[in-house]
Image 1 (cartoon, one colour):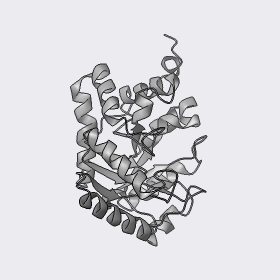
Image 2 (cartoon, helix red, strand yellow):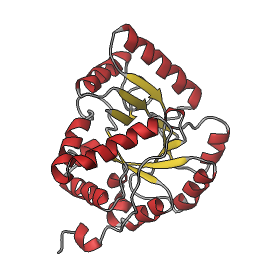
Image 3 (tube, one colour):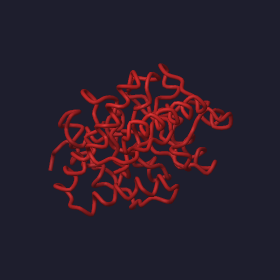
Image 4 (cartoon, helix red, strand yellow):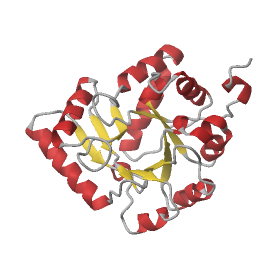
Length: 254
Protein backbone atom coordinates (compact mmCIF):
# COMPACT_ATOMS: atom_id res chain seq x y z
CA UNK A 1 0.00 0.00 0.00
CA UNK A 2 0.95 3.63 -0.56
CA UNK A 3 0.18 6.37 1.94
CA UNK A 4 0.30 9.88 0.47
CA UNK A 5 -0.17 11.93 3.67
CA UNK A 6 1.89 11.38 6.84
CA UNK A 7 3.78 13.35 9.47
CA UNK A 8 6.72 11.00 9.91
CA UNK A 9 9.67 13.38 9.57
CA UNK A 10 11.04 13.93 13.08
CA UNK A 11 11.06 17.17 15.01
CA UNK A 12 9.54 19.62 12.53
CA UNK A 13 5.80 19.67 13.20
CA UNK A 14 3.18 17.96 15.38
CA UNK A 15 4.07 14.50 14.07
CA UNK A 16 7.06 12.38 15.04
CA UNK A 17 9.05 14.22 17.70
CA UNK A 18 12.28 12.23 17.46
CA UNK A 19 14.04 9.85 15.09
CA UNK A 20 12.94 6.96 17.29
CA UNK A 21 9.34 8.13 16.98
CA UNK A 22 9.74 8.17 13.21
CA UNK A 23 11.22 4.65 13.28
CA UNK A 24 8.29 3.43 15.38
CA UNK A 25 5.90 4.90 12.82
CA UNK A 26 7.82 3.26 10.00
CA UNK A 27 7.65 -0.12 11.71
CA UNK A 28 3.91 0.30 12.27
CA UNK A 29 3.44 1.23 8.62
CA UNK A 30 5.29 -1.87 7.42
CA UNK A 31 3.28 -4.06 9.78
CA UNK A 32 0.13 -2.70 8.16
CA UNK A 33 1.37 -3.55 4.68
CA UNK A 34 2.45 -0.05 3.67
CA UNK A 35 5.55 -0.04 1.49
CA UNK A 36 5.72 3.60 0.42
CA UNK A 37 4.73 6.81 2.15
CA UNK A 38 4.98 10.49 1.42
CA UNK A 39 6.15 12.66 4.28
CA UNK A 40 3.95 15.76 4.33
CA UNK A 41 4.92 18.07 7.20
CA UNK A 42 2.82 21.18 7.68
CA UNK A 43 3.96 24.24 5.79
CA UNK A 44 2.83 27.82 6.46
CA UNK A 45 -0.15 26.83 8.59
CA UNK A 46 0.60 29.46 11.22
CA UNK A 47 2.55 27.14 13.50
CA UNK A 48 5.09 25.48 11.23
CA UNK A 49 7.26 26.65 8.36
CA UNK A 50 8.99 23.77 6.61
CA UNK A 51 10.46 24.84 3.27
CA UNK A 52 11.53 22.41 0.61
CA UNK A 53 15.32 22.20 1.29
CA UNK A 54 14.92 21.15 4.93
CA UNK A 55 12.32 18.53 4.04
CA UNK A 56 14.51 17.04 1.31
CA UNK A 57 17.40 16.72 3.75
CA UNK A 58 15.31 15.16 6.52
CA UNK A 59 13.66 12.69 4.15
CA UNK A 60 17.07 11.58 2.85
CA UNK A 61 18.35 11.11 6.40
CA UNK A 62 15.29 9.10 7.39
CA UNK A 63 15.57 6.84 4.34
CA UNK A 64 19.23 6.19 5.21
CA UNK A 65 18.22 5.25 8.76
CA UNK A 66 15.46 2.96 7.51
CA UNK A 67 17.96 1.16 5.27
CA UNK A 68 20.43 0.88 8.12
CA UNK A 69 17.78 -0.77 10.28
CA UNK A 70 16.53 -2.94 7.42
CA UNK A 71 13.02 -1.50 7.52
CA UNK A 72 11.32 -2.04 4.17
CA UNK A 73 9.75 1.37 3.76
CA UNK A 74 10.46 4.14 1.26
CA UNK A 75 9.77 7.74 2.24
CA UNK A 76 9.18 10.39 -0.42
CA UNK A 77 9.25 14.10 0.46
CA UNK A 78 6.25 16.39 0.26
CA UNK A 79 4.32 19.01 2.18
CA UNK A 80 0.86 19.64 3.53
CA UNK A 81 0.55 23.24 2.42
CA UNK A 82 -1.91 25.57 4.12
CA UNK A 83 -3.78 27.53 1.48
CA UNK A 84 -2.56 31.12 1.63
CA UNK A 85 -2.37 34.13 -0.65
CA UNK A 86 1.37 33.77 -1.28
CA UNK A 87 1.14 30.13 -2.40
CA UNK A 88 2.13 30.86 -5.99
CA UNK A 89 5.08 32.95 -4.84
CA UNK A 90 6.16 30.11 -2.57
CA UNK A 91 6.11 27.74 -5.53
CA UNK A 92 8.18 30.18 -7.58
CA UNK A 93 10.72 30.46 -4.75
CA UNK A 94 10.90 26.65 -4.45
CA UNK A 95 9.75 26.78 -0.83
CA UNK A 96 6.48 25.03 -1.57
CA UNK A 97 6.82 21.51 -2.91
CA UNK A 98 4.65 18.90 -4.54
CA UNK A 99 4.14 15.29 -3.48
CA UNK A 100 7.11 13.08 -4.33
CA UNK A 101 8.24 15.48 -7.07
CA UNK A 102 5.03 14.88 -9.04
CA UNK A 103 2.54 17.47 -10.33
CA UNK A 104 0.27 16.77 -7.33
CA UNK A 105 0.23 19.21 -4.40
CA UNK A 106 -1.48 18.59 -1.05
CA UNK A 107 -3.49 21.60 0.10
CA UNK A 108 -4.87 22.12 3.60
CA UNK A 109 -7.73 24.48 4.44
CA UNK A 110 -8.24 26.03 7.88
CA UNK A 111 -10.32 23.58 9.96
CA UNK A 112 -13.34 25.86 10.32
CA UNK A 113 -13.82 27.35 6.86
CA UNK A 114 -12.89 27.43 3.19
CA UNK A 115 -11.11 30.68 2.25
CA UNK A 116 -13.17 32.78 -0.14
CA UNK A 117 -10.29 32.92 -2.60
CA UNK A 118 -9.83 29.12 -2.61
CA UNK A 119 -11.57 28.48 -5.91
CA UNK A 120 -9.56 31.09 -7.83
CA UNK A 121 -6.24 30.16 -6.21
CA UNK A 122 -6.68 26.44 -6.85
CA UNK A 123 -7.52 27.29 -10.46
CA UNK A 124 -4.33 29.38 -10.69
CA UNK A 125 -2.36 26.42 -9.29
CA UNK A 126 -3.77 24.27 -12.08
CA UNK A 127 -2.72 26.87 -14.63
CA UNK A 128 0.84 26.24 -13.39
CA UNK A 129 0.47 22.61 -14.44
CA UNK A 130 -0.12 21.33 -10.91
CA UNK A 131 -2.99 19.26 -9.55
CA UNK A 132 -4.26 20.29 -6.10
CA UNK A 133 -5.44 17.67 -3.65
CA UNK A 134 -7.59 18.97 -0.79
CA UNK A 135 -6.56 17.29 2.45
CA UNK A 136 -9.27 15.85 4.73
CA UNK A 137 -12.26 17.93 3.50
CA UNK A 138 -14.55 15.68 5.56
CA UNK A 139 -13.16 17.36 8.69
CA UNK A 140 -13.68 20.95 7.50
CA UNK A 141 -16.57 22.61 9.34
CA UNK A 142 -17.78 24.66 6.37
CA UNK A 143 -17.65 21.73 3.96
CA UNK A 144 -19.59 19.57 6.43
CA UNK A 145 -22.24 22.27 6.64
CA UNK A 146 -22.13 23.16 2.92
CA UNK A 147 -20.85 20.23 0.81
CA UNK A 148 -21.49 22.36 -2.28
CA UNK A 149 -18.16 24.08 -1.58
CA UNK A 150 -16.26 20.86 -2.15
CA UNK A 151 -18.42 19.92 -5.13
CA UNK A 152 -17.56 23.16 -6.89
CA UNK A 153 -13.84 22.76 -6.20
CA UNK A 154 -13.76 19.17 -7.46
CA UNK A 155 -15.90 20.06 -10.48
CA UNK A 156 -13.23 22.63 -11.37
CA UNK A 157 -10.40 20.13 -11.26
CA UNK A 158 -9.31 19.68 -7.65
CA UNK A 159 -9.00 16.28 -5.99
CA UNK A 160 -9.84 15.30 -2.42
CA UNK A 161 -8.17 13.02 0.12
CA UNK A 162 -10.09 11.47 3.00
CA UNK A 163 -8.42 10.48 6.25
CA UNK A 164 -8.37 6.79 7.15
CA UNK A 165 -9.45 7.50 10.72
CA UNK A 166 -12.45 9.44 9.42
CA UNK A 167 -13.56 6.41 7.41
CA UNK A 168 -13.13 4.10 10.40
CA UNK A 169 -15.04 6.33 12.79
CA UNK A 170 -12.28 7.57 15.10
CA UNK A 171 -13.29 11.18 14.43
CA UNK A 172 -16.91 10.42 15.26
CA UNK A 173 -20.02 9.04 13.61
CA UNK A 174 -20.91 12.30 11.85
CA UNK A 175 -17.57 12.53 10.07
CA UNK A 176 -17.63 8.83 9.20
CA UNK A 177 -21.10 9.20 7.66
CA UNK A 178 -20.02 12.30 5.75
CA UNK A 179 -16.90 10.50 4.48
CA UNK A 180 -19.04 7.77 2.96
CA UNK A 181 -21.34 10.36 1.41
CA UNK A 182 -18.34 12.02 -0.24
CA UNK A 183 -17.24 8.65 -1.61
CA UNK A 184 -20.74 7.99 -2.98
CA UNK A 185 -20.82 11.44 -4.63
CA UNK A 186 -17.43 10.88 -6.34
CA UNK A 187 -15.93 13.66 -4.23
CA UNK A 188 -13.07 11.55 -2.85
CA UNK A 189 -10.06 10.35 -4.82
CA UNK A 190 -7.53 9.24 -2.21
CA UNK A 191 -7.50 7.62 1.22
CA UNK A 192 -4.48 8.44 3.38
CA UNK A 193 -3.59 8.09 7.03
CA UNK A 194 -2.53 11.60 8.06
CA UNK A 195 -0.60 9.63 10.68
CA UNK A 196 1.17 11.66 13.36
CA UNK A 197 2.27 8.90 15.76
CA UNK A 198 1.58 5.29 16.69
CA UNK A 199 -0.85 5.92 19.55
CA UNK A 200 -3.37 8.74 19.14
CA UNK A 201 -2.99 9.33 15.38
CA UNK A 202 -1.85 6.02 13.84
CA UNK A 203 -2.11 4.84 10.25
CA UNK A 204 -5.36 2.77 10.21
CA UNK A 205 -5.06 2.59 6.41
CA UNK A 206 -5.75 -1.13 6.16
CA UNK A 207 -8.71 -0.76 8.52
CA UNK A 208 -10.10 2.04 6.34
CA UNK A 209 -9.80 -0.04 3.19
CA UNK A 210 -11.55 -2.91 4.98
CA UNK A 211 -14.42 -0.58 5.90
CA UNK A 212 -14.67 0.63 2.29
CA UNK A 213 -14.60 -2.95 1.01
CA UNK A 214 -17.41 -3.93 3.37
CA UNK A 215 -19.51 -0.96 2.26
CA UNK A 216 -18.80 -0.78 -1.48
CA UNK A 217 -16.84 -3.87 -2.53
CA UNK A 218 -13.32 -4.54 -3.71
CA UNK A 219 -13.49 -2.37 -6.82
CA UNK A 220 -13.76 0.77 -4.71
CA UNK A 221 -10.70 -0.25 -2.72
CA UNK A 222 -8.78 -0.77 -5.96
CA UNK A 223 -9.90 2.67 -7.14
CA UNK A 224 -8.27 4.41 -4.17
CA UNK A 225 -5.19 2.18 -4.09
CA UNK A 226 -4.54 2.55 -7.80
CA UNK A 227 -4.90 6.32 -7.56
CA UNK A 228 -2.16 6.38 -4.94
CA UNK A 229 0.07 4.32 -7.22
CA UNK A 230 -0.66 6.56 -10.19
CA UNK A 231 0.13 9.63 -8.11
CA UNK A 232 3.53 8.28 -7.06
CA UNK A 233 4.33 7.73 -10.74
CA UNK A 234 3.15 11.25 -11.60
CA UNK A 235 0.41 9.93 -13.87
CA UNK A 236 -3.22 10.95 -14.28
CA UNK A 237 -5.43 9.45 -11.59
CA UNK A 238 -8.95 8.11 -11.97
CA UNK A 239 -11.88 10.41 -11.32
CA UNK A 240 -15.61 10.06 -11.93
CA UNK A 241 -18.06 12.87 -12.55
CA UNK A 242 -18.70 14.56 -9.21
CA UNK A 243 -22.21 14.72 -7.80
CA UNK A 244 -23.77 16.91 -5.17
CA UNK A 245 -24.28 15.66 -1.64
CA UNK A 246 -27.96 16.23 -1.03
CA UNK A 247 -28.59 18.11 2.20
CA UNK A 248 -31.56 15.97 3.21
CA UNK A 249 -29.48 12.82 2.79
CA UNK A 250 -26.62 14.32 4.77
CA UNK A 251 -28.97 15.01 7.69
CA UNK A 252 -30.37 11.52 7.49
CA UNK A 253 -33.84 12.71 6.47
CA UNK A 254 -35.22 10.45 3.76
